[in-house]
Image 1 (tube, rainbow, N blue to C red):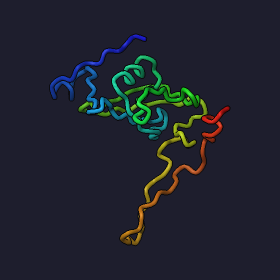
Image 2: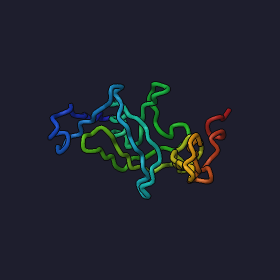
Image 3: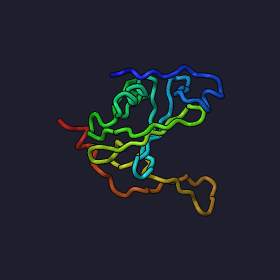
Image 4: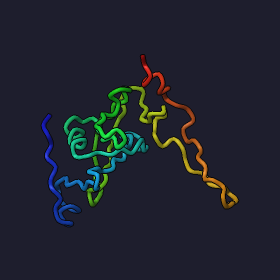
Length: 155
């Protein structure tokens, strides 16, 4: 590994218009990463990276994240084969969010419940606007790419 060097935060002008990556990690040391398909632009997932995960991603060209629940690193696809090859990383104007443009190996799925995208449902609301009616969800992907039980529950 070549251990990419991230720059310390600079002044507002340097952060917003400069030529150095100066990511702003939140109070937990994390930055949000929106992951899109490099070919279609479809949003596949949102993950979080700490400084080391971002460096690993830059260094290897494969997506690494920080699991907030497990408190550990995870390389996307390490178990499932759905490795995300990173083609481009974008940052927003104040460098507190990232977009990763990826291609997905294996069966092409990203979601751990079996769909191509983690965003496989859309929000639907009651047309009559009745109070007390729960907001619903409706699928936008109708078929799973794979059965997660076959991948994650191997004996």
